Image (cartoon, rainbow over all chains, first blue to last red; front, side, top):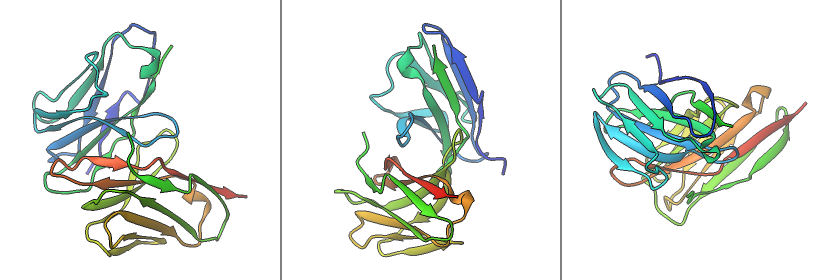
Length: 113
Length: 111
């Protein structure tokens, strides 16, 4: 069990640039989640996948955000035309279908200058 | 937005003291999860609770699922320096297993 892996761990970008993050879930976990977390807050749900299907998206996920999980394994989260308000920790998590336990990666810390 | 009330917001304690924190909600949950998060890291699952009234331990940690299914508490006995961090409760309801999070309890141990 290698755990949930996220890449990169840190990303600094200029406002207006596009960024893409990757998440590799625990193998055999068919459910994958993306969360955003700002300082002093708990994680906020963004979206989740069951296999390759994106089943739910939060209202927090503006049209500048897009997530994919093309083969039902790893997932990418892209933010286009980044804004300073996008600065946050982006967390990926996965779980096995039917299991309640959700396991998180170490996150990608995004700083938009 | 968050729908769980987690308290206290922060705690300053002496090493060796016991710690207690709780989460309450106006809604019923099917599952309660407690996580610990260190700076710059993702949350790590500590304890999962599945039934009302359930009391579960993990080493020095003990958590309970409230009888009303609207609350949960976490106790840490004989705290040690590595217990420092932010503890989050998360409640789960519905079939999509989406978690609702508390705002966290920051634990600080006085040297």
